Length: 273
Image 1 (cartoon, one colour):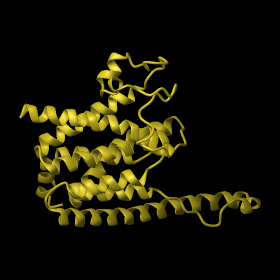
Image 2: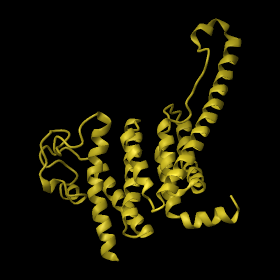
Image 3: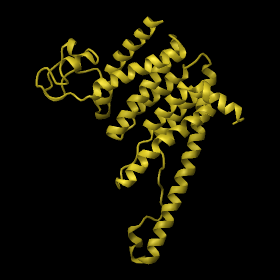
Image 4: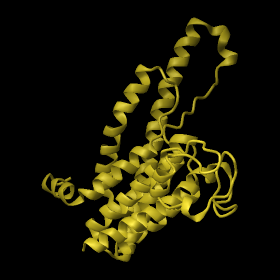
């Protein structure tokens, strides 16, 4: 069994190494296949021994072998995180094709999360891959499709309701301002439409439903909201007007609910939720 986990970890490290390329190049519209791996600073092609996950970064002291520019710690962290995902999924589901599909789905969500945090972008290609792999999370593929569609539909409705509420609240605020300064009417929009959540969140919701089922997916969203709350409060205190990306929290909530799905499922059933 120990060999199985070692294999899962090594496979995760290899996937994580490739994931770094995807995270760096995809948001910039670059090919993930060509050119070959190279230093982003001096553009010098890397040798194969420069691409050994984690080990190369450690042996090089976190610097390029050619120009000595510092290499971001993101590279080994992504590789180690992906390896951890593969090991935990293997522990949860065993060494099976379904476990591989689950691990790859979480890996795509990891890439989405980092890209969302760094570039404020949500590539549909990665989101669709996460959803596709989620369908093969178990042998009950038809059930996974149904649960995914059900939860994505519910999330779409939630997005509409929250967006409507936020928009109306902002509209009332603007009207109050206009009563005090009516000459500014030409500078204010007649209709306010604020999107509270992005379309990418709905696709992630499909993945959540496909892996967890609708009930536990709701628990995962609750966990995601709890995780996002401190970050949201911190941004308000810092008076940071930037939008808080929600996909990283959805992905984290999904993974936590997945790992403890048996316990959480028992609690949900006990309270007839």
